[in-house]
Length: 282
Picture 1: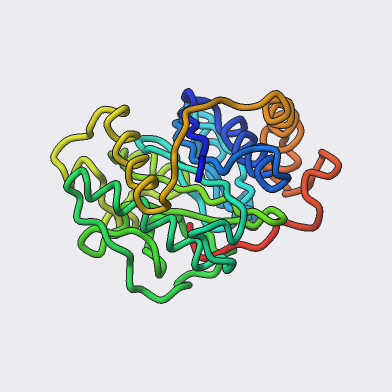
Picture 2 (picture 1 turned 180 degrees about the horizontal axis):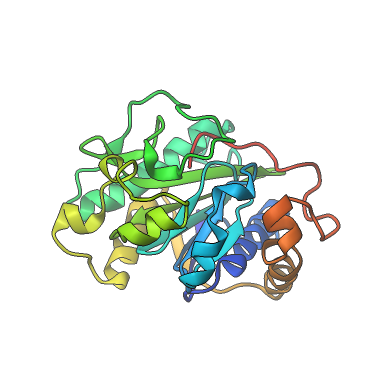
């Protein structure tokens, strides 16, 4: 099956989330191939789960340290996107080898990531923890504890992910921790230290003793997806329709204070009905 591979430049949080939704909607409408995307964030950004209160973020700290704040289209909990590789997958439900249930899709994507990580010598596996340890609206940060089906090394969380259904397609995105900044991770969430976070997480730097070059990371993970999904990955770019929708979403939704702070949609039709269904994650 032909897939599109997008490797996009580092960008602000509002733009990254706008592109994810624009691509997801194009795939759902049959206008774009199933898509695997890898990207980074500049400046670092705290993203809130769709249902989280804005009070989770320490706005003053984020402003003082040059951190963006946005809200994701998916559920889950707060994530500071800093030293990480971020992936997203947009694919029609039921497209082989994907099942038609969200949890099955979630696990299949995680298995593809594990395959790629193992190619780099990372002993990654799916967590056997219960599927939901913290309610979706919890103020707890994403990496405080792995949920069932998430990717861990030695029981510590390496990748945090979240999913949302978009019509006949799904959008799943997640963060592979490359390194850790204790001050920013704690401060962005209004914590005095990262002591409640650090024991639960592990970084690629800790596992391998170094952070591989970006191109090497992308190549290994892409190979994991190609092997697991029996996909032919073809490098590509955004279509004109996707680019136009992403620009509008970045301006009127993901970069707009009324959405980020109050979860109120400014853009008419941004969602047909509510935030969609979320699978376990984040």
